[in-house]
Length: 297
Image 1 (cartoon, rainbow, N blue to C red):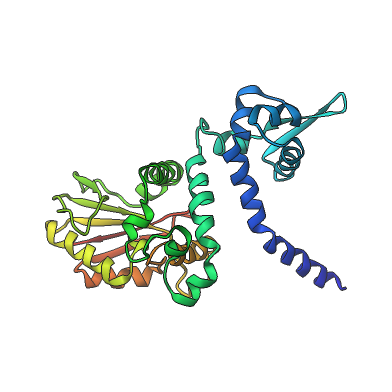
Image 2 (cartoon, one colour):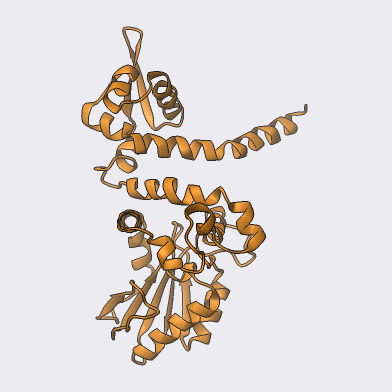
């Protein structure tokens, strides 16, 4: 095997094992590994197993993989391995971390990961997989996404966690000082009346829906607002050729698996905003997960 073939095979193995890496991190969060180590410091695997009520062999394997992934530090003392959180784990993977993503990780583990088991069917059929995964009709998206109060709370906490890190890059993308009254649109916006405001923020909303429903919602907003008012759309933007960025492509595929929407290019957003009556279209790539689009009536 040539050197180039070796590199190709290494990349191939990295790809096929990717889902295992995600599940290791999800599982360590679910079991409470990072929270325990955050509160008690260096512990051996057998102590961790006892505290968490797990099999000792299984937890040792999990801890060692977490160490390889740089989620845990390991220190040898008297021929025993002592485990401690890395800075990454303390920041993002503990419930109390200053930049915790704990709830979003649980949502991805319990909901997104489960739905992605049916990615093949989603691509064949072109529709979300809530029916196969949870027995919920795929045409009732609100019921599927918010299928229980616990699920709703977990999902909303998860969105807040992502926003706490990425939101400032979006909000500062444009000068919004000309919009004194800002309304962050949420709830059942297809049925509920839309209040009057100077700027409407649609954060991670339009990507859930097909073009016709996006246009319907935007027309409702256009009707509710005065001339000069605007909409700030917060989404991850695909490149115009749709061949990147990879995160945006994966998110778009997730919209197929979990919703009835997709991620879009700037041109696609310009089209639906124009059809709804908005003009003065601008967009900015933030370099982070979410990008910003601003349009006015």
